[in-house]
Image 1 (cartoon, rainbow, N blue to C red):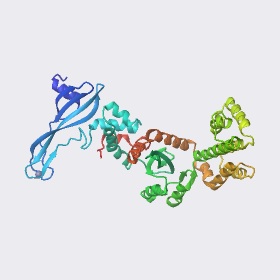
Image 2 (spheres, rainbow, N blue to C red):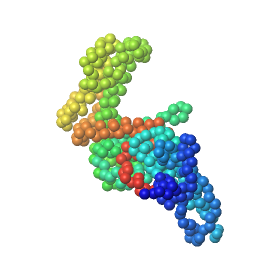
Image 3 (spheres, rainbow, N blue to C red):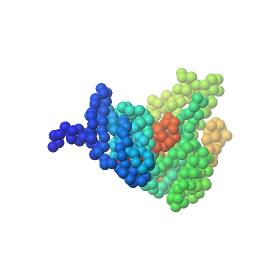
Image 4 (cartoon, rainbow, N blue to C red):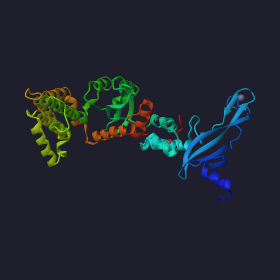
Length: 426
Ligand SMILES: [Zn+2]
């Protein structure tokens, strides 16, 4: 048992080889002043003996103490070399990393809160009673090593590319896009690269060793030519698979276009909130099986009232038929189904939106049916959609690309959190 008050205090502060000089309560936070008991260090340049120059005070945000935010006021020693090598300040990485305004233990805690639990930086800063930058700098310094860990991901059999809107910047609200590179089977975010052109992912894939690229069997993509070019060039042997999520989304987009066109043609203006087609817009894009009897009856009633020629009804039916494709388990059946679908959708009796959908599906036919060969279960698609949602939730709106990448990868990139205890901050 410790009975000496000074020893008790040092036990509570919990830092090795540290003398507690005093503890003050400033009302809203506790201030603990310390200095180290380290021996006089040799000169880092000539290894000769040094003399004490002066001391300087560094205020560091620490973990809250018994529920009260705490500051560690570290009286750092400055040494000087009599041989003229100059002066230097003592270092104790166990207390705090050189450039950060936060203690080592508080920085590691903040990295877990923001990176692993996906909490906002301002929330964590408020817990610690410090500024936003103090926390973000810590997450960058400690998180960078975690996401750069070469063991973070190994071989990947199914690789996916997906464009993501990161934020809007400037007075004209310019959209800033990134491309997410994903292990589709593991549901792991591998990396984030700037922009949604082919160049970002091409550069990233170029940096992987050739055997790694050779092991990618499946390459999933949306229905855009950009990522198709990436795969054609970088992973020529991988089978391209159109992501079902994007196929169904395209069908829904066409349905929306058709609804707005019919609205305009019948009423002469854009949808207003009491008009049948406008009121039907959510019911239309919902999966049919998710509508209960009441919703179904309502949808049919609204279409009868607002869709005199049945164009919206037909586009809605096309969308539901596209979705049916993914209920088919058998690969040959799926091929027969899609060929019939392509014919039906492009029939001249169809509304223009349906024919356009048919043309796109025809162009991506092989990639769309490849999904039926590639999937083992619905798991990967689910995992990826959840992943995208998670990354958006934690990272959307972050204007700084480096911060976005670190936070997205800490949260969805499955870093090895056990490394955090031993890593050195950058
Ligand atoms: Zn020296």
